[in-house]
Image 1 (cartoon, rainbow, N blue to C red):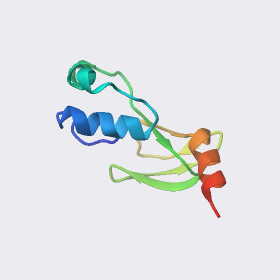
Image 2: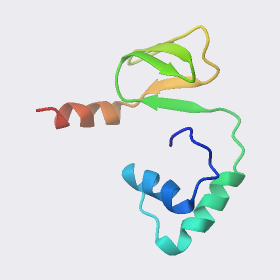
Image 3: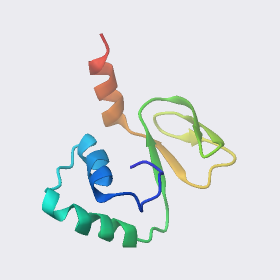
Length: 92
């Protein structure tokens, strides 16, 4: 999910989740949004779809398949190999 505020409308939140493969019945969108807004996380992870340099919240990280190199990241950054494989298949 993106880093936009979680207080946005439930339909927009569910549309973003649907883009990642999760289908949410329209009658339950508000309940899902309320649940997600109430969750407190102890750690945040950002998944990226390719190796190399990434800028996340103004910080830089170099992502490799098995590790991420960064001096200033306050959260984990990981390579999402499923997205990477999908990107390779989609290329002409």
